[in-house]
Amino acid sequence: MSLNRSEKEAVISEVTELAAKAQTLVIAEYRGITVADMTKLRASARGQGVSLSVLKNTLARRAVNGSNFEVLADQMTGPLIYGFSEDAVAAAKVVADFAKTNDKLVIRGGAFAGKTLDVNGVKELASIPSKDVLLAQLCGLLMSPISRTAVVLGALATKKGEGAPAAA
Image (tube, rainbow, N blue to C red; front, side, top):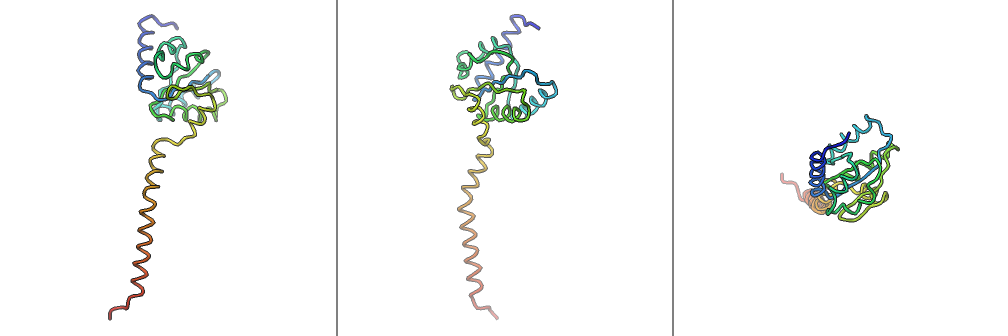
């Protein structure tokens, strides 16, 4: 199905807006994936805040022209799915997790902060915990000394309470 000029311009402007907001772009070849599996992938992506799109490569190249993702323009060939995310690791995590269970999805690469990522780079990015998990870990580290101090003070208070003579 071919698009007329105004439809192409609309697609380009939509993808340009996505690219402007996104921190990460992951591209993967989806040849041979069933519609049901693609639906699962899209649902998973929506839940993580990732925008997955199947685009004509020429339109995608035009849309990312001048953005941090322009470095991927030479890799935009063949049937690709484009995953944009505002969270630095979300797109890589969604695509890499799906690729583990479905061998038809082949990660081609990605871009983060204006730098090209190869397949291993995307997988490494996917292995980084999400922002929420990192914040929880940081809170745990900050709370650890406080809780240990409270436990020690509680133990001292209990010990002193045992050693004091009982009032009759």
